Image (tube, rainbow, N blue to C red):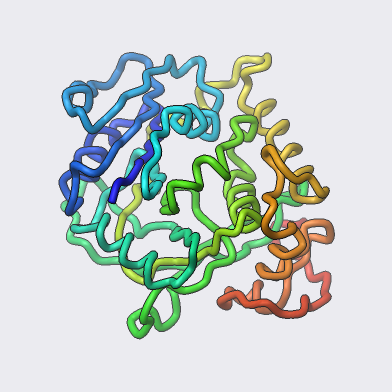
Length: 317
């Protein structure tokens, strides 16, 4: 089955190793179509990627970049109908047979439109990777000052005994596997900068009829620390429309509007389920900045009556 792979890279020396590992670890590498958004200042050699017909490199001057959502949206413009869509960051490593394992795992969910997503286990490119790690779930970790949910992740309890993927409340943008229809139905909103990216994806996907799951196998690793490496918000500090803070503020306002008001179509909610259904499923209330006891405890989701409480999380203050 064909897989369209999206890789956004901002001045990242891990880009080439990530793409090469994606191909090397796949059972069916010739069924992959990898599109890279390479934002650079001429300081990286990507000739190994240009030479591979399975990889398309979109090249942009990093000074003109408008953030990660902009980068992923540009990639999706080059989408060619595929059975599956995989979205990863440019500092990722892959488990052997990741492609067939993900497809089999999606089938085990029994859902018509499953999404498998998680924050992968960590790796360090300076050290030899020996595998390891544990599958994780994403949980609510409070709220930003303006009301966007914040997330944390931790080991899935009893994952060794799980017969298949477990239900998820939220998704991670750095590792997201979905049917190819996701790109057409839940396209990236390039007006979001960074904060709010993941809750925007989760709510829109759910309201389009996608069901959310966490894998119970370690299928990838992510380089989290990345000390002394370039970040978009470090480079874009010149006053004006391209300043990262202005982009982020506008993006956050946009996400909050889409979460709190009934906006169907376009980059708003989908036509299959209302936003209220997502809030009930996830046990979260965007307007009140509250969550159910089960959500706060990181338990697996289910349809239940919300528990009313107003306890603030530490980051609300």
